[in-house]
Image 1 (cartoon, rainbow, N blue to C red):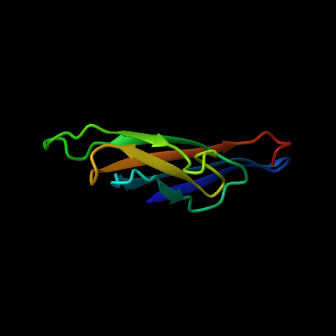
Image 2: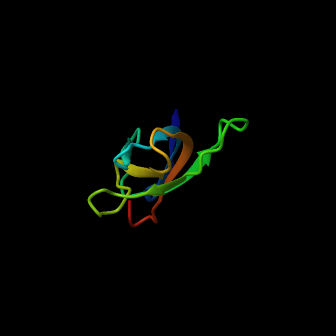
Length: 109
């Protein structure tokens, strides 16, 4: 599930883009990150924020942390999506929400 939007100015064109959504990541035994793709390509690389959602509040807690990273060493986010990693025991899955924003001034769009 996700939602997208744009800020538009008749004089300058697109001034900002936004996408918010939900996902799930699972820790693999080899520790590889997972690629998540945006529903619509951004004009430029957006800022991405990740918020974990603890859905099983009454079960056993598995310590974890989520991180943005690119397996090739580049930026973790680009115009098409982002890489997300999880540090935890193999097999642990965590739900999360993401919020991606691209804000441009009138000359950038």
